[in-house]
Length: 519
Image (cartoon, rainbow, N blue to C red; front, side):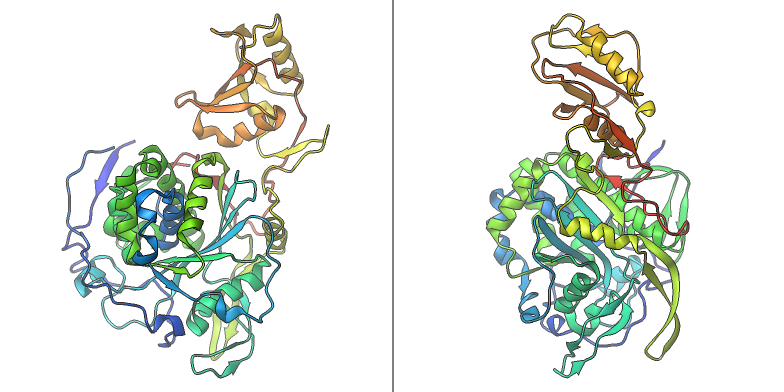
């Protein structure tokens, strides 16, 4: 596929239709937005640059990268003075909140705040350049890090989700009764605390930390990473957002990067969310593959770029980030999951206040099971198996191709393992052979990162086996059997371990950070 590069020119967007994609909302500022500093004096590079050719989140996705990047080092030592911290959880004291369960849950919010962007820059970015109301959430994601530190789950919560907003005081301190509304309205009505309270009430998941990034933070972070590759199978042109991409792989930054994750006229809100997940996984792949996590200078560049546009809760300390970064560094990309909350009715029409026949999204009953698993810190894809019981997997053994090698030096081991796997339905490729070296005590699975879901099936069959990424293997796994082999565990196949979606119009597409950016 062709590789193109797209960078934002200062004149981009001039003469084109300008349209703010965000919903129209009342001109009402939330309490914790009244003191947000203007960062317009800070530089932002929107000029084209020549670079060697080597998936986009909203601002909330950029926040995830910040979390991944916070392995610590020099940049984190400056964290407290570089970002805006606000009391998100104090106003929730005395309210009914979910039980604080195992694992760590973070609410990531990308807002359409335009502070620091000049009117010409706003026009070039297709985010409006005239009057606009207070900032609104453009992306809302719930991130769960397992207590064991071996899985990260990112759940997108559509901003149009029809949920109950709890009773709260308005900005004048007058009590307001609970009401049904779109999820992003909570931010306008009661600021960050009410948004957290609303998400907790809707999901039953206790939120531990809050992290927010705006347009500017997203743009500067992507620039600091030298752009991010995205892949489309056919050309995309979306006039409202200014998005124009040729078929193939494109390294995007500036306007195209922002448009890629915001546009929804081309393929609906579900398409927008799917693009955000693809960009997120691409972004995580780039951060890890380029050494950002272990390079203090690269880490400084990313944090410096985003810090002026980041808001966190007061409890997110330097030590928390150090510990969090250390945990994230060791997680396999195949164990970072992205999906959208299951939706029953994607165009649920309701009256909201004086506004009649408004389009919202109604979550399905299946969402309750999903959030119950997150709250209990249970894996969504790998059902824990007792001795002899079958583990739920998404890819059938018959679709898993394996070459078997005897790495232990035990006579006849390769053939015995190949026979065991074949009897369990796996596709054995070629004749079992001895490996080039012997004496291995641990079984190793070599795999191509593009086949991570097939890997989960093989891992379930051979618990305890180590994994090794070997790019270019394609759809065939190489199994180097060690002396620890004890047999093949049974698996049960499910089309989706989260269960089937309740509406064919609202698919819950699961992907991982190891998936190909073109999937």
